[in-house]
Image (cartoon, helix red, strand yellow):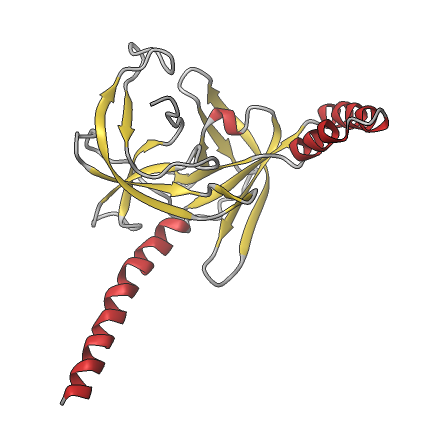
Length: 237
């Protein structure tokens, strides 16, 4: 009898653990790693500058340029319009130097699926948002993340989804926190006459930029809807 109960408890524990993993995987399939490809002229100029620094013995500066040439990364998420057209939403600063953009989606077992040659369709520097378009005729997603129809509320549970860096490489992270100020007016970041910001306590690290801020929604396919886009982290408190 004791053994039977122990096995039953273990079975229930496994079921309970599997449930959130399945939900997280659905969200993860709509959130990607965004990388920018620089203009060829910019690459050539920086390579010449790097080589000149290297020849003069400024090795650390040359390495810094090499690191920059490898390209930074941020996060972005899939939005599918009513006509089926696919877009990626991210921060403008993630793609501000891009000629083209690539987006990578990391599967749980199927490896990485990469899409190249996305263009910056539209961008707004003031609110730091950008919309990326896939090459003509490419619409790999039938559905994407949808937007919450309700405004943020103080104390509301929220999740951050994206790919912050660990040892210089993007790593999936789903962080949980709460809304600490549903309408923060911070003049140094954005004109309060344009929009207020959602201040929250969910985990944010370098590479989360452009990823969605989520709330649970049982009616949504992914189990979550988008409340906002993660853009800034306050380091001065």
